[in-house]
Image (cartoon, rainbow, N blue to C red; front, side, top):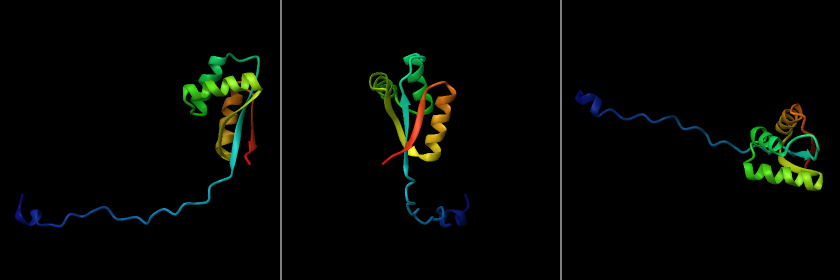
Length: 101
């Protein structure tokens, strides 16, 4: 290594301005309805896959829908809630969305 390179200043990555938080989007609830058609294991697996719930959370959600008729899967912004509802509906699960609050 030549001497001129050894004394050259090290360039750091350019600094970026801090990101200013944007107002959060209003939350929407994805609700799972009880049905007598789908196997509980299938419902749990589907909630894990599309709503990204852990197995224990998906199990609690499924059992609550089974016992009470309805369960909150997730609260998220509208576009994401619609996507999750569409994916679960495509699997013949009964779900709905509604504005939280």
